[in-house]
Structure formats: structure tokens, C-alpha cells
Image (tube, rainbow, N blue to C red; front, side, top):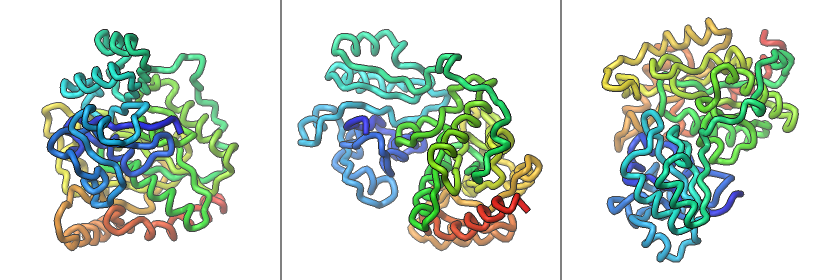
Length: 362
């Protein structure tokens, strides 16, 4: 535990841009979250209830002044809870970040735009003796690992959670599946590949899109092997980044080819027609059946598909379940709604996958 923290979303919590905050509200072992600084529209609400109807005792505040006067524990850290296109510092974040630093509250950010290099914010931090931690600041070359092929000898099954697009809940599904596996008696671990995984406190992983391309495969291999050595798990889960064929950052093949993941859970948003984060283009999302075929060509197989329920948002869950049933017939694999129905239906498939891998993949 690195101390207390408030999450900064500046009015974006209830949008897809708030996905970092969403993960932290659902759970983190690194920080004790004492509040969400979002703005007047959500002030006084519980962040968990706003997110998915589950109260989590994380109050929303409009300003730092009201948060500090509320009686909540003073935060040691301000976490930037927004994932913006291109990882840019959004204008609405600048003033509350400057104020946090002036109050002596340290800032941790997963944005690509490095806050420690921003003259105004760096000066505010220096005046107050606060720290700015940029998670996506590239690590020194001496700390990076190049691919060796040692992963070929790793006997621990690896299961990738990949997506047909970005920002549709891959990490959340992976976290839920890890918890369900552990409750079912399986020693499941998670190797993170993004900033929120670090913020949630997982001990093994790296930030893929802050790693020079030549070292992505080696870092993935290194952390998978380290996780296997240090924890002796029955299963390692690896949530992917972006989408298999999102043109702004296709990602997933590395986890199959370099990480040796022979099983895949495919996360899909059936209510989404166009890829996210492709500028002003309206680029239609590919047929998910083709993504299943792509996974097979890479040497793995899709065990099941999971659906991003917010894209099917309705007071009545029946349409979402009807869509899941339709896709199950179309894809030929089980389809699960994690946030509506839980993840338990995946457990028999996971156990079968582990047994199959133990038998050499036959």
C-alpha cells in the first residue's frame, strides 16, 4: 500500500475516458481511495454507485477544498484517472493538478504527456516539495529485457484477455476472472500490461505502450517467467491493450506469439459500430468471427467471448442476454456478460484449458 489517494477525473468519470478511474473504483491494492474529484455534477454521490450501482464508500467531490473539508483522510496522492486519446493532458485537468501540487499532494499519472516535464506543474511541485510520478516515462535501456525464447520452457498455462477494440473492459474481466479462479481454488495470477494494472497494485507486469517496440516481447517474457517462478500459479492471466485490429494500435499477437498464451477470452462490444481513437475516421469494427480466425492463425484458440455490457445499456437486461445468445450461435463459443451475470460460467472452461495444457495441448 502506497498510501491514501484521490482520483481526479474532472467531469469525465461517467464517460469512457474515465476507464482508469473505473478500474481503481472497482479495486486497488496499492492505494486506499478516499474520494473522487469529478466536479459539481456528481458531487455527493458514491463513485461505485455511479459506475455500476455498487456502493464502495468512495464519495465524489467538486473541489479539493470540499474534499479536504469533508473529514475524509487527506490524500497522499492525486491519481490522474482519465485516459485521453493520445494520452494528452486535457485542459480541464490542469487547474486541479496545479492545485493538488500546491497543497503538497503528490501526483501519479499514466498519461503519455509527461507531467514532470510540464514547466508549470513541475514548478508547482518543486515549491511544495511534492512528487510527480509519470508511469509512462520510458525506463532506462539497462532495465529492459530482450526476448530470449526462455518462455518456450514455461509450463504454466497463459490465458490472454484480448479485445475487438480498445476501452471495453479487458482488464476488468481479467480481474474478475482472477478473483473467481481464486475463490474456486485455483492459484491464478495476473501480469498487467497497462498503467491501471500498476495502479491497482499487481506485482508483475509492465506498461506495454511505454516500452520501446524492440523490447515489448522481452518484457512480456520476463514478467511472465518471473511471475511463474515467484508464485508457482496454476494459471497466468494477461489482459491485452487496444484491440486486435484497431488501426490506431493493433495489439494482442504479442501475448500469443511472444507470451505463449494458447487460450484467449475475447472481449467484444456488440453495440459499438466503429473503432475508438482513430481520429475523425469512422472505421467499422471487423466481424468478431474474423478475430476468432486470427487468434487461431496465431496459434491459440478462443475459449469464450465476454461482452461489454455498457454498450447494451438498458434497464432491462433481457436485450443484452438476447444479444449474447445470438453471438453464441454466430461465434460457436460460449458468450458471457461479466458485469451482469458474473464470471462463474467461465470457470469450467478455464479448468478444462488448464488440464489440456497440462496434457501438452492435446
